[in-house]
Structures are given as C-alpha cells and as structure tokens.
Length: 430
Ligand code: IMP
Image 1 (cartoon, rainbow, N blue to C red):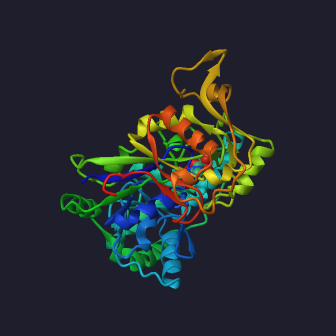
Image 2 (cartoon, rainbow, N blue to C red):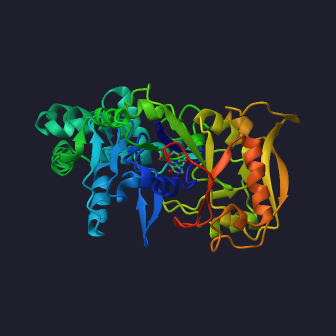
Image 3 (cartoon, helix red, strand yellow):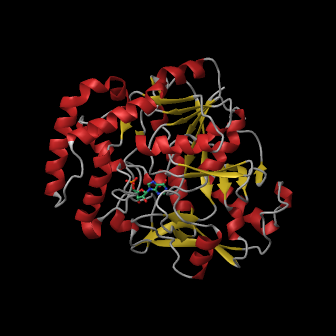
C-alpha cells in the first residue's frame, strides 16, 4: 500500500487543499514536507470554509494525524494563531506534530524578506514577505533556529545574541534597521516553547512507523512545481524543493516505501508575484478567469495573474513529479468562454523548443503555440456529478489534456465543495 503525494503542476493555487482534504477520508496521516506560511489552502469542510497556511489540510478529519515535517519552514506565531482559530471554531487538533528538525521563521526573517525585496528594486521576486527565503538561507548557512531548539530554550542565549548582531549588520547593509533585540527575541522563543513544545518530536520516526504498519500516509505539496527552487523559473521561485523527491528528504521517510503521485492541474493558469508567464491574458478573458475563479491570493490578498492552460509547462512539471494521474480543478470557471486556447508548445526565434527552457530571458520571449477548442456555456457547479453530466465540449477539453499529458484526470473538480467532484477510478490506496 504505497503512500500518496499530492503536488501542484503549475505556479501554486491549483486547488491542492480541496483534493488533499477530499482524499483525507481514507488517510491516517497528512504530511507537509516543504514551504511554510507562504502557502495557502482553502478547504470547504461541511458548511464551513477554512484557510490554512501551515497545518496540513487533512487535520479536520478526526482520525488523521497532521505532521509538519523537517523540510518545512515553521512560522510559530502564524501557526499558533491558526491552531487557535481552529479551536475557536470547535476543532480540537489532538493528533498534530511538528518535526524537531523543522526550521523556524524568526521575526527578523520577515523584515529581511521585505528589505531584500526593496533592495532588489526592479529585480524583486514578488515574494509573499513571509520570511521564507531568509529562513531557508539561514538553514543553508547553518545559523537557523529549529523547532527542536524550543525544547531547550534556556541554552539559546548565546545563539540569540549572535543572530541579532549578525542580522542587524545585514539589515543595515540593506539600508534598513532591524526591529528586534536579544531580550525581545528570547521572550518570543520562551512563548513559542510554551505553546508548541507538546507538538515537537521526531516526525520521521512517526512517519516511518506508520508507513511500515501500512497506514495511509499522504504528502501534501505546497505551491506548485514551477516555483521549485531548482526546477522552476529561477529566480522567480520559492526557496524550497517542491518536486516529489523532496517528500523523502523533507520528511525523512525511508525511500524504500513506495510513493504514488497525483498531480493537481487547474484548468487554466495563474501566477502570483513576478516571473515569466507566456500564456498570460490581459484582456476580458483574463478578467473573466480572475473574477469567476476568485483569483486572489489566500496568503497575501494579491490579485493573481491569469492565463490560458499551458501544457508545455505542465508536461515538464509532470515529468518531474512522477504523477501517474491528475486531478483537474476549477473547470467550472471556464464556462461562458466561447473559444478556449491551450498552449501545447513554445516557439523561440521561429523554432519550436524541444524542452522547457531554464532561462527566464528565453521564457519572456517565447510565443506559445495554441490549440483552440470550442467552449461551453453551461454552468458546471450544479448537478454535475458524473463524467456523462459534463457538456460534450468540456469532455473534449479534458480528453485533449489527458491525451497531451498521457495521464488520466481521475478527479475533476467543478466547484468548491466535496460534492462538486467527479471521481474516475482509484488513486493509490483510495
Ligand atoms: P516566497 O515563497 O514568499 O519567497 O515567494 C516566492 C514566489 O513564490 C513569489 O512569486 C510568490 O508569489 C510565490 N509563491 C509562494 N507561495 C505561493 C503559493 O502558495 N501560491 C502561489 N505562489 C506562491
């Protein structure tokens, strides 16, 4: 019985939260293995809507153990407020763990994120300013604070002093001034330690134990593969690896456990922040997608850039993901568009590219090669439960995607709620 990873195949916001929550019925454990509060998942559970940034989407299910694993960047303040919101709404999360190896987003990381972005000026990435890049930078520089440090907070004095001195010097080099001193930081760490220590443990041990007992473990990817720090549109990427291989590194799961993968693909494209976007639309169709799709960032409230589905990019992402099936989301948003375009290839300097390019400069100058399909006027968000309930044009659109990518759309989402999902075959243990 393999574990299952759910990964986004675009630039994030593909609807992974809904798919994770949907499959969590059959799960024993849901693991976040990268990213932090820069991610945002919207989940409809019963009649309530939840917006998660850090807790795994499956935690609303009583039997599910939620884990924030070592590859994540944990923002303690945001996590505590998320847990409080859940408790206030009647959800007591008892089975929840944070890896003792996960790095902590410190208050100065957020400030430095902003200072670095301002310093870059026209070369800014358009980050969420949640401190994710600076946190992972400190991890690589071996000066980060980890969740495990909160278990021995009394011994952190010298490390806190060093961090404050170093970060003050860096902030001033960026023409800023750090708003933190060692005493305030120490008080923060004590507060975090009190609130979060009960959850902090060796989660790799827990995950391996569950996988060995053939429990159903789900890995919930954050963001989307095109934002992967190695394989995405560098430097317009996030600071962690999103590719499925990182489910092992980012959680410590023994690679001998088999992992099957579902890729989540939105029926059109969106992107937040800077970076190349060959199929971007700045016309009324783009406006339609943004308004009907409610394309506003869960984390930042920024309006997302919208465009046609890009299968050239999706094919590349799929090959990195190992996905053997996809969940296709937000098809209902396309209702009412007469002719729908899908990019199948890129032309650069008059030639069709054989492979997805690494260069942002190339990506900014490619011309997408489009296939045009007939759209549909019918709304899909009511009374559509089976494949045969879909208009013939919608089925053609889906079949074209399946044939181009060589995988089946085993889950098709036509609205926010769980009922608005068409199921076509089994996924791993489901
Ligand atoms: P960071 O992850 O905050 O450093 O931001 C780096 C880039 O990734 C920016 O373009 C963000 O808008 C983008 N990004 C980060 N997380 C998400 C997400 O969950 N959805 C969409 N874009 C994201």
